Amino acid sequence: MTPTTTLILESGQRFDGLHFGAIGERIGEIVFQTGMSGYQETLTDPSYAGQIVVQTAPHIGNTGMNDDDEESSRIWVEGYVVRDPARRPSNFRSTRTLDDDLISGDIVGISGVDTRAITRIIREAGAMRAGIFPLDGRTTEQYVSAITSVPVMAGQNLSDAVSIGSPYVITPTGPSIGRLAVLDLGVKNATLGHLASRGFEVHVLPQSTTLDQLLAIKPVAVFYSNGPGDPSASDRHVEMLRGVLERRVPFFGICFGNQLLGRALGFETYKLAYGHRGINQPVLDRRSGKIEVTAHNHGFAVAAPIDGAVDSPAGFGLVEVSHIGLNDNCVEGLRALTLPAFSVQYHPEATAGPHDSTYLFDEFRDMVIASEKAH
Image (cartoon, rainbow, N blue to C red; front, side, top):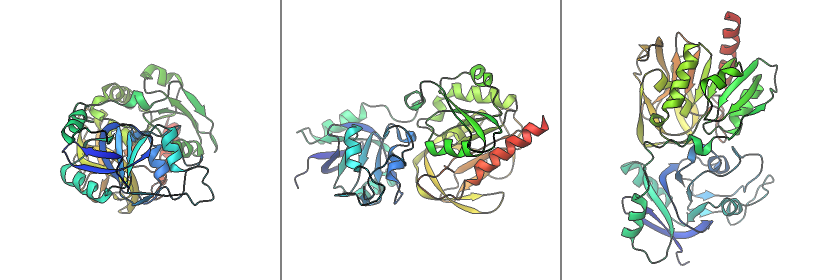
């Protein structure tokens, strides 16, 4: 078939293919996702805002789309790159096709391109800006010029783009242990379900919430969610978290929440070369010695010493790196030893993905109950 669409990388590499989903042009940071399944959860994960996602699995769309597996109310990816989209879905849960949802969500994609070759380029050169464009006569240089006019991901605060506008409450589905303040920085539905099932009355709060507003609900604990953007551009959320830690309110953070806890404790964050995105990442729990297969979606990480406990540079006592990534020794978890606070870089709710790490929600519940008894 005659190519109709092109994917252009900031570095100038070009891949011509067919349009998939909506027709138009989109520019964002291009990243690859290694999951063999779970494309619906990937598309609706707010952490992918601003990014063009390349699926390394060759066949995408086989199981269609449904109303049960969505992680939020919409598709968030800036663009979508696949090799072979399914001609028709084949699954008893499917209610519509992937192409239908891409079109209705105005998500521009491209198919029929060598996604493995694109992935190899990103692995060698690192995540970069890219664009999906209709083939309309422009030269590669003109496309690249349009791409480089868009800001890079580093330095961007995207929390406002993905967070809710007003708070809401989810009632607990287990015996209630109190109100939990969840700062929505791009939270996933599965995370909220796990928290509610542990007995929390989940108060989901906009990212614009102040410390006084958060404390006004009298939470037994605070949770910071996953989300997109650069943690170094979220100073206000860091300062609010320091206020939480100073009051010894129990805290749990996931992904972006882990990076913000790292900053609140006084550590720096940095951008990974191409990030971790997939549902097959090995992580070592240094306390138990167990290796967990985990789901990841992050392009930034915490720079903290991985050997032994160290003093928090911000004065919050001893801190240890609780989990490390076995592919690159990346910090995958932090635990304060003198405060009721911990976090992980990966996604223990893991939809789609393995459930090796759901015990962390139980540990959070147990920490909160122990903290309440101590007071």
